[in-house]
Amino acid sequence: MQRLSPDDRPREKLRRHGAAALGDNELVALVIGTGAGGSGALEVANALLEACGGLHGLV
Image 1 (cartoon, helix red, strand yellow):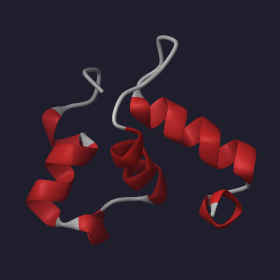
Image 2 (cartoon, rainbow, N blue to C red):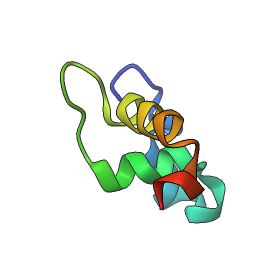
Image 3 (cartoon, rainbow, N blue to C red):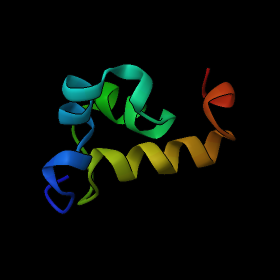
């Protein structure tokens, strides 16, 4: 997340603009909280959504 500008980070974006302004990957990243294996939470969320076929597949 540190590579993203502060305005693009999901937590700050949520505070500033509300949940409706976030994409599915950003919402999942907020639930995940932290990354794993050298990947940030947003990267993990993207991989998870891709592996599951999107948000509906994850549910």
